[in-house]
Image 1: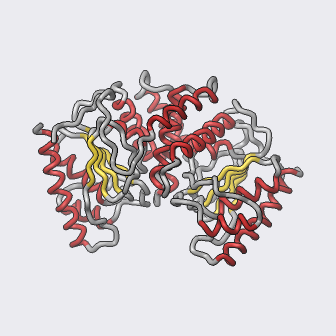
Image 2: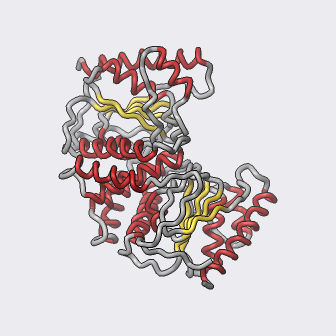
Image 3: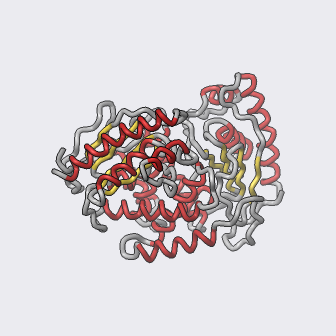
Length: 223
Length: 223
């Protein structure tokens, strides 16, 4: 084997079979984000956020076909959170961050239910300490039963930026994975993990989360 | 519950029991990194790298007492890799990146063995697609038997920057978790996973990696 070229202008190597080249999609996404966050962040920060978001999702995602699109969504949300935490983007409603282990069940259900009951009066984000490959199919199913479509959601690793943007951080089974910042309310919800549970059990967890979500929305919007 | 304050100047909330406040350590680390990488990166990039490295390690690490120190080491290495990939920091010897699933066994052994045999003629980094809580104790043990001390190493998630800096990327059991960039050599080593194996089995994996490491060092340094 000869020493491989290290020049960035080196000819593009053949891709591994079955892997499509995401570079063109990612570069187009970087341009879009740069124009959306112009004045808030340097191009360096935006480029780093996008490519690190892509690599973070690629490490754990099961379906990788849409990863450049998901990475753009994830990077956009992270940059928004960072700008909010600095007061550069409006922070008009309470920001709630839901954190569980896999971001595939509990935190996704809680995010959807709080968003549903708050009707725009709260903004939610969710993340996991060890994100799963995909949202639990049983969770998608029991949420569809009550009219909430989670099919566009995806498991995301917990990042510093979304913690900084949060007013309320709710942890569910993830221990002390979440950084502690001053000026925030930290709550822990003791909930069963829906992983490998029967549909009836997942429904019971959903209903328990729904009760807590309604109470939280009442508290945060009637203060 | 009243709506929590969102001002960054809000009074510091009490920490959860058992969690020491890492903010002072992280801010001191940010100052050190800013002076080390002055002229290469903006303070924004350096601050983001440090705090995101800290949160990424905190998500998965078992022992969190030394996390600010480990986060500084991790951020320093990632910033170095990024600067190398841009030609801003010297890249004098081949850069080899080892990637396995947990960065707790195979990739750690391979990194240590390549570094040992290369004697400065190759630089190595390692990472995992789903980093474990700690290095496998059996792996530490069989490496100590041959005089290599891995006790200062720790499992790290795969990031975009270290892939960009690499000339050779060697994957071990992590599927297609690693982004593909042009101009790099990608190799896949089919190796048993030492997780939950007997000491004799871990020793055999170590020796198999040693054979491959010696051959790689020969190829990269005699071309």
